[in-house]
Length: 75
Image (tube, rainbow, N blue to C red; front, side, top):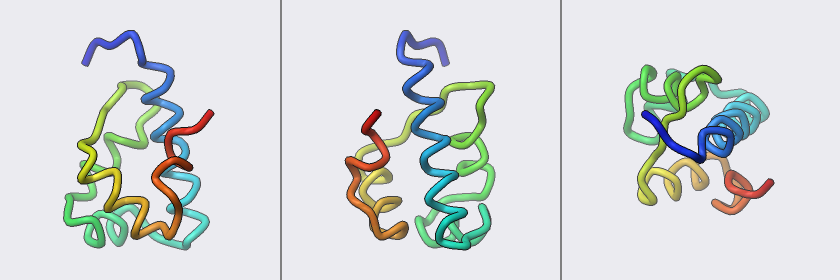
């Protein structure tokens, strides 16, 4: 995906990865908890290609990680 917000997408993915690991979740366990595939989570956490998510998925991820959705978006 081409986007002028590539850096923000990458930072978002790194934050997802950070909080996922902080909670002791594997990509597979996290994916199951949010109703997605592990490859979906891997795409989000990839540092080589930006990958966005829907608001629905953002809220579900934050709920599973027990954080505010804003935590995943703030700089």
